[in-house]
Length: 145
Length: 154
Ligand SMILES: [Mg+2]
Image 1 (tube, helix red, strand yellow):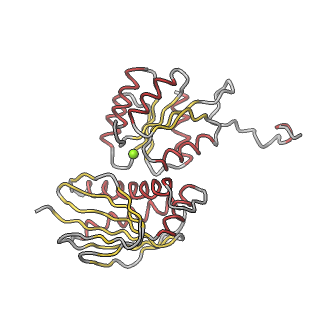
Image 2 (cartoon, rainbow over the protein chains, first blue to last red):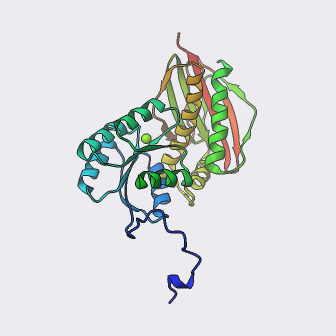
Image 3 (cartoon, chains in turn cyan, purple):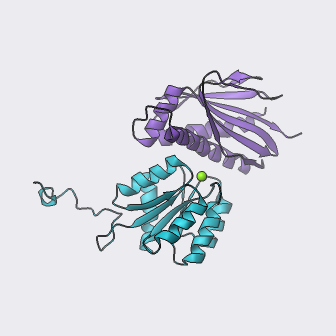
């Protein structure tokens, strides 16, 4: 059987999604676009993150956060969603857990909403179209804050 | 229709398509169509309301939609399922968001309706009293027409 030791140079770079204790970071994804949800989930899973849940609207995302708590490390939050928008969901999550780490996912041209989200307590934001590098950079930066 | 409205859509389509498909995009010749027109099979439509009103249609045939969605997802998507529709809708979203940001900078004020997607054969779109400008975009996956009908509110 081949073990990790057979590929000494292959895994030198630690996966971004795993904490110093070797335990994966747990991510909750809130986005009404199945495409974006899947894209974020693929990028993060490939770096060893654990996807704790994917929710398609703000209300479901907020409920899920409460269910998962404290076993959730970070949330990606879309802004425009049916039922409950991302800023309202963000506010409710922060009310419930003032240390929640929430990263907003925004379309271009929503600066006012992004500002509002940052004032409300979002830790960072990522503008679509998403690419792997951008997503990982922002998520890792927030986790290391 | 004033040409100021169309340029931001041309630019945004070009930029976003190149970025999400990671490939060359060629812009075809702009042309004008009036009243009703058939669409190619898959159409994402975004409405605008404010100082100006109208709609932007992202029109392509089904094989193109499947190939574009497959490229954007990094996997083969052979049928017109919910993921394909969500992907094309998001593409329309990203292009419109970029174009509208530019239009807002130019001083136009309006809001967008969330994109809706239509699929089917023999579809036709009818715009009342407004002509549509069409910008064809050639990507390796096929041809996508950006069909813009906007007018100032009277
Ligand atoms: Mg959304």
